[in-house]
Image 1 (cartoon, rainbow, N blue to C red):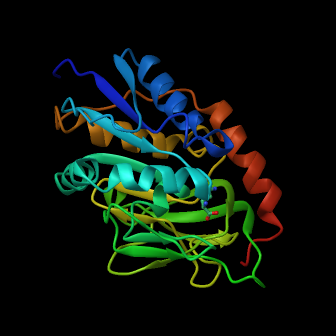
Image 2: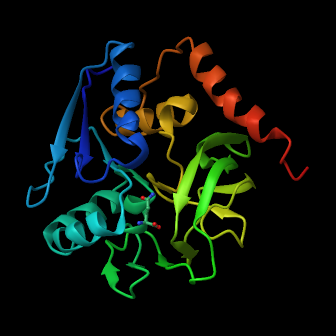
Length: 255
Ligand code: GLN
């Protein structure tokens, strides 16, 4: 196998780090280092260009409306076009909550301001009505990952968003088992297109869902070497973390 090294591009690291989404960076970094795969983390801030290396994962965390408004403009130029091109060519991107919302066509704030999104996913996000609650709580969802045929795998996390996301011509990432997901109505959670993943799950997401972390890593490494395989790791701690949440919500499973 070719010698590979991974670059993690952390978009707006300081602004979009709600509910510890930086834990997603740490999880990818450690699962590479434990396997002896060199990994570098690059923070990409306002006004800074995205510089892919050919073996990359792009992470876009969650943030409040104020931060989203600040960076929507930054994404409206070449940076957004670069991200669309990266996704179109099979690049690996994970957007969480506020970052996920800005991967759609637009995110409308409760004040009625439509923040333009990058348009990676055919979806948009509307504000909650004044009589509607924020969608908050632990989430258990089922993912039908194309990589593994019909195998169904579960993910857990924590959601806290006012926005309601409506999917257009795009696959959901998962179906909600417990929790609200995209809008609390249609049973979908997140979105998935090629190797771009969007989700409302904070937590942070990846430490409790190691199979998904490894899927992102493998998708990125195989762009350099399509025969690449990941050595298995002892995931007992991660499994315990997953089960701590799945057990917590078990009584709320709808069957
Ligand atoms: N500001 C967005 C909302 O409230 C996203 C919040 C977040 O990233 N948790 O829907």
